[in-house]
Length: 166
Image (cartoon, rainbow, N blue to C red; front, side, top):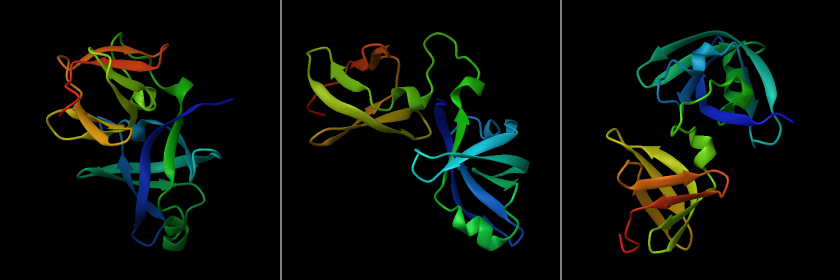
């Protein structure tokens, strides 16, 4: 079974010829455009492959044309769809580097044993990324080397140097 990594989201149509406005979830905006095909899904359960015909960067967004989407109505129907790449097609990362999708769902615990909850999402803030951790309340924890002490994908947890009272 394929495992897909969500790399972006279709935010709406662009123009009248079926072009899509994309919000990439990648550090380098050009990364998504390097793939010749994307998998689209509304719910991350059912994925459908589409060939990418053309892409360009415009500010912080990407404009793309994919096969079988030929007018504004077709493009509008894909608004909100997620763009996935098959995980086996992604380059291997160096030790200590992680794809965001690997971190989503991990438990976050501090050195005192306090459990903050589960990583729900990750935000870009400009200066550093921030883990959005949810349990009974939402906790924002900066993704910095002096805060994130250890990531253990096997144990599905992250050890942090962060006070539970923040």
